[in-house]
Structure formats: C-alpha cells, structure tokens
Length: 616
Ligand code: AGP
Image (cartoon, rainbow, N blue to C red; front, side, top):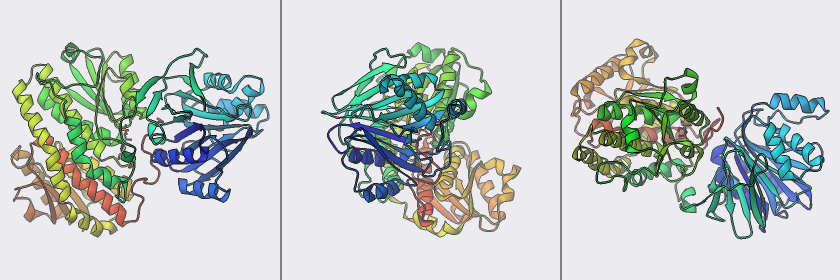
C-alpha cells in the first residue's frame, strides 16, 4: 500500500526521492509528499492526487534541489480521506520531526488521546501523525533520533514501515519496520531506504532486506541496524539482478499492455529448469523434505484476488493429479474461520507481491497450527516466502500495472509444477506421466504467443462494448475461476458491474440479471476433454441466449459446435483441459484492458486500488 523512499548522499535528494516515488506509485496514488533536510530545517511539500501534482508543487518552489537528505511518500489512504492535509509526511508541532508511514497503527486512538491530553493539536485525520509527535517528544527528551524511533516503535501496535528525519540529525534518515516491507540500498557514498528495490535500482543493485522489528539508520557514510531494543543486528544482503528497464514501459502505452505481451516469456521462465530427472520440481528455498510432502493428508490454498483465482485452478489440478483433498480459501477469511490444521496439512500461499497482509496473517496462523507452508511468490526475499517452509518463485519479472496479468499466468504455471511434484513424490504419477504433462506445459508459451497475436477482434469487440453497464462471465470446471478472473479484470479496470459465475449456478438466481443485449462471456471447455462438460456449457449458452444475452465465447480451435449459437467467438489453441486457463484467460485480460481504455480510464492505476495490499 503506500510507497516510501529515503535518501542520504551527494545527489539532490528531491531527484532521487521523486524518481523512487515514480517507481513506487503502483503501491498507492491517492497523494504524495516529501520532506527534505535543508541546513537543519525540514522543508515539506505534499499534494493530494497523483505524483504529477506533487511535481508541479515542487517545480513551483524552484525544484527544491538543495538538500541531500530526504524522504518521500506515495499514499493509499487508510485513515483519513486522500486530501492535502492527510498526505504524508506528517510533521511534529515544532516542525523539527517529519515522518512517513506505510501500514496501520492499530493503537493510534489511545496514542492520539494521550497526546491530545498533553495539549498536542493534530492537523490530520491519520494514524501516522501520532508517530511524528511521539518521536519529537522522545528526541526532545535528549535521545538521538535512532533511539527515539526504537522507543516509539516499542509502543506501536499493528503494521508499519516508518521513515523519519529530524532537524537535530540533519544527515540522517531513520527507518523501522514491523509487518510491512523495508529494504536498504547500499550505494557508493549514498544509502537508500524504500518499500521496494525498484525505488533505487537506477543507483545501486546491492540491497539489504530488513528483518521484523528492526530499526535502520542511514547517512551518506553508512548504515546501522538494531532491533527495537537496541541490540545491533544484520539485515540480509542481496543482489538485485533484474534490469532497471524492466520497470519501464518500453514503448507500450501502458504497463498492462507490456505485461500482457510479456506472458510467453514469463511462463517460459517460470517453467525453465524446474524439473529434475526424477520428476520432482526444484524449489527455490526448501525447508521441507520429500517425506514432508508424503506425510501431507490435506491441502489448503490461501490467497487473495487474482492469486486466489490461480489457487482455484490449482485445486482442480491437484485433486485430479494427486488425489488429495484440496480446499481454496480467501486469505482474509482463513484464520477467522478457524480451519482444522495440523502437522499433516500443507498450506500453499500464493502472492505475487509476497507482502499481502491478509495472506501473511493466514500463513502465520497456519504455522502456529503446525501446518507446513509452501509459498508461490513473484518477489524474491519478500515476507511471505521468507516466513514459509518452502518457496517456488514465479519468474514473471516486476509487475507494475495494478491489474495482474503475467503474475496470474506464472502462478498457474507454478501451481501446475507443485501439483506434478506432489504427484511424483507421493508416487501417484510415474515419472513419464509427469514428463508428458511437463512437455505439454513447455508448449504453452508458444500457444500464449499465438493467442496474443490474434487479439485484434477482441480489441474491436471491447471498443464496441464500451457502452455496456454490466457483463457476466460464466464457466465450468477450470473455466469457472477463469470467468471470475475475467470479471475481476473488468471491475477493477472498467469500473463496470461484472460478475463471474459457475455456469451451472446461473439458473439458481443470477440469470435474472440478463436483459436484451447483456454481454455474457462464456469460457467453453474443450469438446475433446470431457464432452459432458462441453455439452452442459452449450446448454448454458442456450439459456442465456434465450433471454437476450449477447454471447461472447472463448472456445478451443476446431470447436465447430459453439459458433452458430453465439454472437462472437474467440478461439484458443488446443491444450488439455487442466492447462486451458493459461490460454483462455488471455482474451479476457485484453478485453478488460481495451474496454477500460475506450472509457478513458487510467489502465495502470485504477481508482481506489493499490498494487500490494499491506493492510488487513
Ligand atoms: C488483481 O488484478 C489484483 N492486483 C489483486 O486482486 C491481487 O491479485 C491481490 O491483491 C493479491 O495480491 P498478491 O498476489 O500480491 O498477494
């Protein structure tokens, strides 16, 4: 949710911070602000709305290029509306302390009451502002900024990454984290703090991941890390090996278009070199033995949003291949439902960002119940993989557009690998059976490229559908989660009422939504797979057609039966039923993107959303 950047070094801090915020804007874009240290004085600028509003305000002040130390913030609002006054940084009453924050301080109401009791007048509705006042109070009592931060952190509950500057420590930025991400960048005579390495990748590729409950202090000369009690500690150094250009649009109008186009490569990368000769997958970090995989007697897949839809597809594959019961759960519901978990349960958590708080909390709940956790994530070293027993990284590369595309496809690929691995390790499938599916998987990148090359009719169709006020998506079996994903894409991008349904469920209520011309997108299963499924979906098409729907079918090449019964049909290459989502999801991504573009919406940063949701 919010993106934060801090800098200490020889460059104009505003340039480094602005550039960092631009790369972190995907994390939140309700408002943005900076605090810079100028000769022991803090100067701030902040504005509601996109980063461009802040840039204009900074330019109107002559660029603010003097200071070499500063912090910056781009916000996804939690406490307080997205206004100028609620934008970060928040500054103490004496103007000497400035703080930015990502997360939620759960005991802010008590802290605010305490501070107001001491006569502090608040100028915003945020939970963050109390940190600025508490920190000012600590430093005012004679401790240095780092110790002040530790003392404040010990009083805070909830999730937070904090960065602060203080007039008494003009060369210093102090950061702290609990349950929210923070990495340090180690440059040559310059140091960085940020929510994500993307913020400083142009300056250095050497990074340090901060652990839970740690405080970090940077100056132009170095950095130091302690825990909240002041014990010196180390972060985890890592080298960032992706290219800075990966975070650029490279000629595409939107990141989403670029990321859709990258899917053949992303899936190929995720599959590459992943199988050993025995049919097992090569996990990236394994704190689980093959015996652990054999001891499992049930599986839960836990995730949010698009990742949840990938998990729904995985359920079909795992139950079919592994013959183990597999439940899929929304992470935000999982721990509150008090699921029955024990040592023989495996929980697969799926998260592109590796930071989603709902998923992280579900993971922690699972581990306290002694379940073994396998993470599927796209973000190396993020919290969710770090806290899991084993990790399989998708290799989608950085995904900037808020609407997930290539992350979804690579999650599907990773889920298939996990399913096959379980089947191999548990002796349910022979090595040659696993190899046959792997060989088919290896063909999908080319098929994905074929589908993407034929998307012009989908684009045209989407433009013509721009006036529709709603759409339904239906499918059966693995087509059902694809339908849900298609509807999610349309909701988040086109701000349209779109719903996905299991096609068979329509007649139990939702069919009453259909009026003359209502668009219904149908994910049609292969007629070569289970013909029963295909026939049932054909019946569902008849049902909606009879009520006036305009039907758009996604069908397999060679399916001659569907075309006469629908208004539009988009064909995808032949593949086996379980792998079909790797292809059938593509037209739905393009459809949503083009329809939203036709409506003039912001494709990469849809309203009210943020790329990674680090609050519960
Ligand atoms: C979908 O387009 C969204 N970006 C969203 O549903 C996302 O998949 C969800 O918030 C989970 O994120 P994660 O994979 O980073 O945990």
